[in-house]
Length: 170
Image 1 (tube, rainbow, N blue to C red):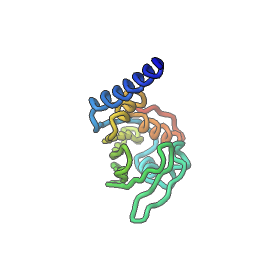
Image 2 (cartoon, one colour; image 1 turned 45 degrees about the vertical axis):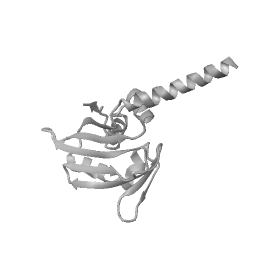
Image 3 (cartoon, rainbow, N blue to C red; image 1 turned 135 degrees about the vertical axis):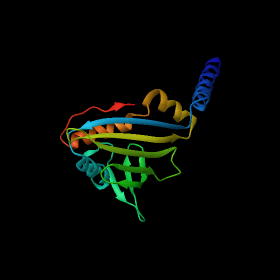
Image 4 (cartoon, one colour; image 1 turned 60 degrees about the vertical axis):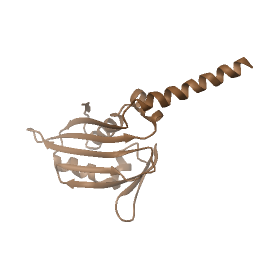
């Protein structure tokens, strides 16, 4: 019987740490990754704004489907996520937003594109996001980080463009 009490105490302590620790972390966050590509801004913009082609070059997107009334639904490791374009100013800025209040997370990605002196593109992707449940906040901060999705997106974009470049967190 004492082993049962020890197991229950460990589980209770773990729950307390997850909720307590997560409650100390802000719900909202901002994270930016920047990558420099040889492709011109027009080509980079065309790639990041063509959500229908995402499954062909993003490993984290299995399928996309158009939503009635605008936007699309991506199916990937986090399930089905509804997205919408908030603002698009070719070829310098493209903003998308998660359009589903039932998810435990959400926010926007703002892609800012600048032409480099060599004619390539400096792409800065900023996530203004939030994580609702405190345990998820703690796990995001300690294990996943806020830049992982952006790094993956930018690396996949570079590969799609036939390039190899590493994003830089800021």
